[in-house]
Amino acid sequence: MSDDAIWVDAGSSSDLSERPRALRAQGRDVLVAVVDGEPTAVDNACLHRGASLEGGVCRDGVVTCPSHWWRYDLRTGALLGHPGSALATYPCRVAGDRVEVLLTQAPPALGMREMLLAHARGETVDDA
Ligand code: FES
Image: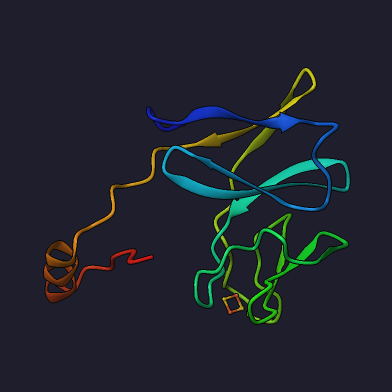
């Protein structure tokens, strides 16, 4: 476990369902749901254009992005139809009647200058 990882409360287990709910903590935007009785957490940013997946139709553990209908398995983060592409997933646990998600602090966002310098050095940067 990373030194800066902490368990973040995502709500009561009775309040969570297959309908995903956004959780913002540690500088991250995460989508939390309960699928097949197990809590799940994935990045809440579509791999297409970064739209929030909250509010997307969810059925059988698959959420559909409300923007252009890309579909993700909430258990694995997998983008359906695109092997090897997936949203980041986060460990979850149930503590009493609460669901918790293990999150590390997100790296600070780069300014435009730092982003351009990183691109010039050939580094991969997250410009979301
Ligand atoms: S932003 Fe999600 S499918 Fe386009």
